[in-house]
Image (cartoon, rainbow, N blue to C red; front, side, top):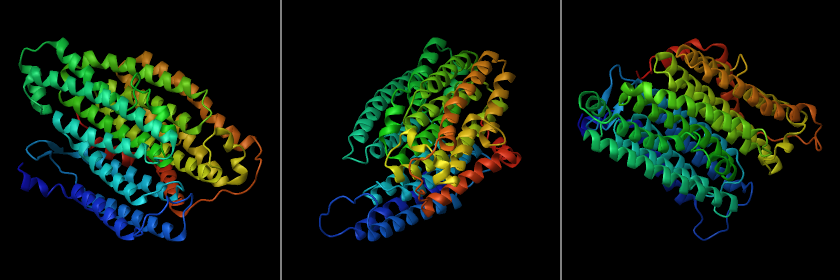
Length: 489
């Protein structure tokens, strides 16, 4: 499909770009005409009004883009096949826009964010990059969209430029990301040299019809998986995650644990099931080993953490291991498991970080000890965080249970029995450190019973995520049907 025709289907992306530039323009008009110091913690009344206006523009842009997202009955190749508009990309567009909207709402309630206009615009550009990732259908656009999201993520991690931890986190993220991207690009160059193509469907046809070295093809896939494994924080490419999650502003951490991870899995699914499906018997067992390694590393190290952001960071690594279980099995059940788990995990982890933001605003600390007696200070926050932690542990009838049920069932269906047993043992380990926080909230008395404030944007986002994990856990059938229409097989 040519450029002009493709633009008819590119409306959501154009709306996001327009909203990002509009936010920058409005912020410029609202800025004082003379230099002024950085806003202090909490900010003044005028600053609060400006933040609300900028956030409303950003959220309205996301809602408008979401209103124009369409799910075609047949796949549509846009811009000469560089992007593919299909039910699979539709699923991840909706997911990406929802994640960005919840993150912006959480950011509005977070007290320590200067330059809110630039911050909001960066997230709108990120929304644009994420939905490009979900639609990319050739190696060039996979690399460009992935790097676009990565560069914006580096900026957001180091957004608090006077915070030494944020600067350290951004530098680590940049260095690890650069190495991973270079390695992935080398793998893509090998694949292009073997097939002479960058389109994923053409690569699949060349690999099945032309005599190519299976060893070189597998080597190219492994190198590409380094870049995608970095993005989804898969071991052994996870080393950046805990430090970055701890040093970044908490709303950015919440986004990083779900947004790039979800779209990284989207790229991995499209790549494996479009170009490398014929090599399933070679990469499936490798993914099974990486899955066991990832979940074990994440869960075991999480036990000793005293900072809640680091704990949830290692938990995020472990969750990537569980999602890889579904990816190992090249079946409808396995892919369904991946999509269901990603949706459940996104709602659950974002909800948990919303609670972390409220506590962090009150205490100015992310240490786990600050959660002692939270049930006395804010029963609603304590009960909400408990539900999110139970969902991460896979306890019914919450969304996390449905996700785990599907990936475990897919592993058993594919006869990956060792993987299923290791995952079950890891789930027990994870329950220990999740319940450690629950014990603090309910069984350890609070030193100061002063109630914790819940700003309205945070409260609305919290209610939405709570409703999401409860509805998805108790009435999963409509969502499962939607997922089954979005499969890529």
